[in-house]
Amino acid sequence: MGFFSVSVVGRDRPGIVAGISRVLFELGCNVEDSSNTILSGQFAMLLVVGHPGMTSPEALDRAFDGIRASLGLMVAVHPVSAEDLSRDKEPKGTPHILSVYGSDRPGIVYRVTQALADRRVNVTDLKTQVVGAKDRPVYVMVIEADIPDDFDMKGLEAELESLRRELHVSISIRPIETLEL
Image (cartoon, rainbow, N blue to C red):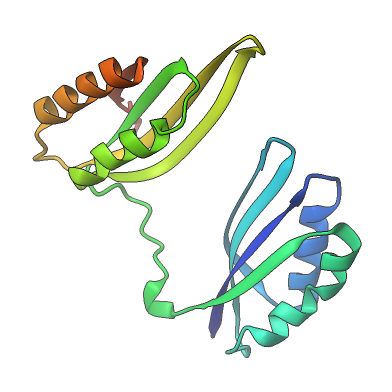
């Protein structure tokens, strides 16, 4: 079984998901995992696909030539080893939400995520957006992160307080409520 990551980027328009999934279906690929989003009018999709007989990415890459030309997409295919695939979706600690609001300025994402990385906190999802009026834009960033159970929360909160003052933003962090059925 060969596994491949497929990344797709291009101007958003109807038919991208159908076109990509048609190519994969016609080749006999199974979509193992996927996610897509639209950022400022740009469509972005990432898939992990498997194929029982395909071991190199070249044939899969060539199969996207038609959709690259017809929809103006950039499609990249890379092999993924079976050992690098993870189906374990369980958090490695306690999942938290970190929210940042403030004036839009360069460096907010870097500074906050570096503070988390310095403490070995794993960012599992990150979304950013500029909202508000054109003359008063507000930068919004929401991070989902797994915080280890034996973690120094007071040290992180002190670092975030320092970033609040330096970046002139509001930062809050709280555990995600989980529901077990």
